[in-house]
Image 1 (cartoon, rainbow, N blue to C red):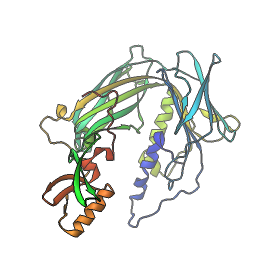
Image 2 (image 1 turned 90 degrees about the vertical axis):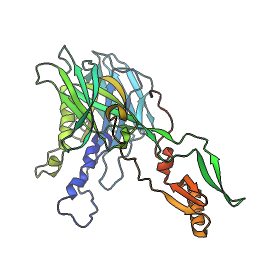
Image 3 (image 1 turned 120 degrees about the vertical axis):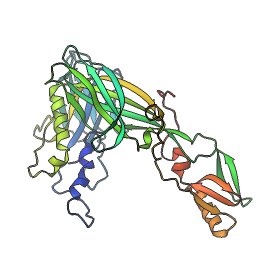
Image 4 (image 1 turned 135 degrees about the vertical axis):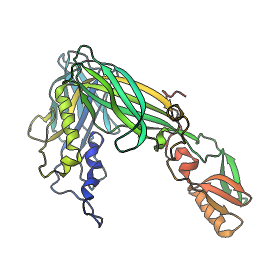
Length: 391
């Protein structure tokens, strides 16, 4: 059984199983597939529209999970308050913003369109604890790669946090290296190549990606409840995402022991040794059950966790002041067309019509063109500046 997002690592490790002795390509297929419902739900003490995802496991040969539509999703607390969720795109979002309150007991309820009803164990908000710092450090990792590693530090003097889970959201600036302020077009009326000034920003873009690793740690066996430079992200100096300005938003969730154990088990099962082991472990349950059939296999855990966030920015030159920039996202070769010749002229006209090439420069009738990603960053990113961005 394979699912995406939280459970993506299972799918990412499938190629490992094909490395031993494989010469001829083999179309991997699933045998003895057993479908299961997947519920991803973390409710926090942050005042916001809370989100819950519901999908089903999928076969290896399928593209991904199917979002479960038409479900009735709601929370209840021990004071009789209902928190309704509505379907939006590929998730369920609370109708009104709310935050988990310390001392209240929360219950997740999911009723699928086929009538199957699922309910979580009652959960309470965990201890609150703020991130102290996020520090970037230049290191060489165990694979011999040099780069920047982000370490998170936190401390709970009360000793009540103990179990930590981290997620991050990274955003980075992209500058197209072969951008020009004009586009080359072919005017079919005049049968001439012409330049037009670009009307939208296409040189500088911003991309955002979310983490998909299970990043957990615990202080339960330590003398104090302190996290010091726990590594949440490493980026090689060869990765273009840090070429210019980079930002990372780190989220720290405080878990209870049951939630920590669930995620720890999930991480261990996603390791290559577990997948290739002769003694495969059985299915492990979270805290969500089918009300009418408790033996049904349900993947997921309903978390009520306190969250702390912190964002940092840095420029590549801040950490690597005298070093060349990382390679760009694409190989930016120049494609030259002498439009004085019939065949190159015809080929260039077709490429411009299909937006396959962008103008870079010309000498007389010889035009040098580049692929879209090299001359127009909006071909793979967004030119919208994020609200939080700081230059």
